[in-house]
Image (cartoon, rainbow, N blue to C red):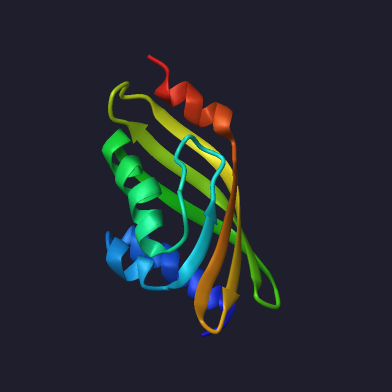
Length: 127
């Protein structure tokens, strides 16, 4: 698979509700950097599951990632898209454009960096 194929597969597996399979695309020492209040402490898929996926699923009644554009250069893939979700406590909807920067090496995701419209997310979280 090309680096873009790996990233597309990651999104597809999340959309199908298969987080364990998505985590399986990550390198054992993946570095995951977010702009939200979710913080991934340490490295590895287990750290991503604990610091991001668990809290995200607990806070949002529903959410999806909708990538629309992929730009690739070597092992770096940039995906542009939108986070869409309904906050569990407030019931407010959010649509936040994002840019995700992925680094893929030997078919595994080794690094992820997130850039997102944090204001759109904060407004949905505000009671």
